[in-house]
Length: 122
Image (cartoon, rainbow, N blue to C red):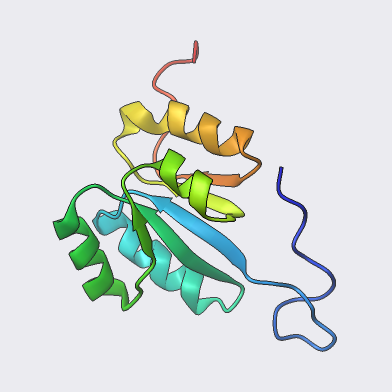
């Protein structure tokens, strides 16, 4: 599990030693562009990685956001390589439960763009 990154104050605030929260995105479709701009524009977080197997989606993401995060084929690959704090799950909704569970078990905060599960039995 990740250790807390906040060591007092807000990023940029007086006496602040807080590091930016590190986000990994699962997929890079159009819905993620606005999230990425708001997250990176907050000054408190950054998008450091994207799990996206489609090079065209990666190119559109980079064009729309002016960001260049590391690109991985899967969430598991990101978790093996990046020290994340948060995951934004924006994949097809049928994958949300498994991906959210994986990210939560890795100690990440999770934002699921759509429902986290298809059924109550998940």
